[in-house]
Length: 354
Image 1 (cartoon, rainbow, N blue to C red):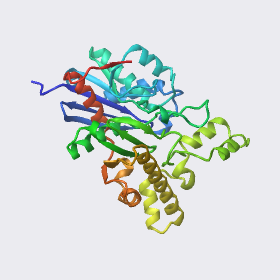
Image 2: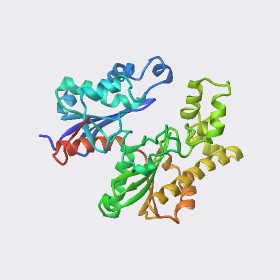
Image 3: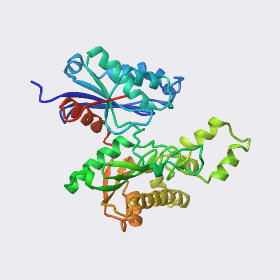
Image 4: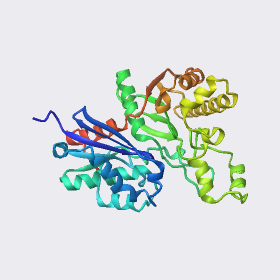
């Protein structure tokens, strides 16, 4: 007898595919498949990786496990702006992700992989809180140039999940609380979470603090000059912003543990660069506190970098005058995906249609 719905969660990243099977809230299988750069770079597009990744997942799934599944849920990718929630995967969504209509990203494969498996099993496929969740207040959309609108590209899935955990810790409904949440990972998202909505965010791809691999917000005049200097192609500049910026630009490494070891051995440059990243994170937290008119119930630090005591202590020293700080490290994305699907399967909410 089943104890509850059984859900397969799939979270494709740039160098890994993570997946887990949940029976209700119990984990019965969890795996991370690492992909070598030389393998991934052989594929001309993200969509062309689908069969390769699917075959890797299938190696871990017995027929018995597959037959137990009630639904499959994937991390949502770059679609048009959406409200928060659980969405049923449909043809329109798959077509837009296949063609990368709104941009190439590994997370585009989440819905595609979920759909491929679900079709064979004749069960529903979902996505939950994709990176394009847009709950911005109108005043937050203006950039300063009429032709450029600020976008909400954010680690919505994990931020929503840890915000619910923070609300549980405080024993209050999420819609009665204001949080500033900083997701600290390969990209850094700092958000103003007002009464359950992400009313302002820094687009982790091109705004806010620099991160291990992203350049963050840059002096625009100097950036334009560099773009037209003739030294770099458009793609090389885009790489500087999104894959070779931040810590990597200064130190040639994205590995926080390695950088902290160098600091421990007296490396002055590494210390300065890491402290500068923390400085920018703290500034962004202060900015988001202003968005909330200073009415902040908690500041929440999450993401993989939040495991670093060295970094979180430095952030807390700068921002704890604004509000108490909660540390909820790591990424809750597989669990958050499963929970979104379970809410639909158990009739707690209706699936949204793309």
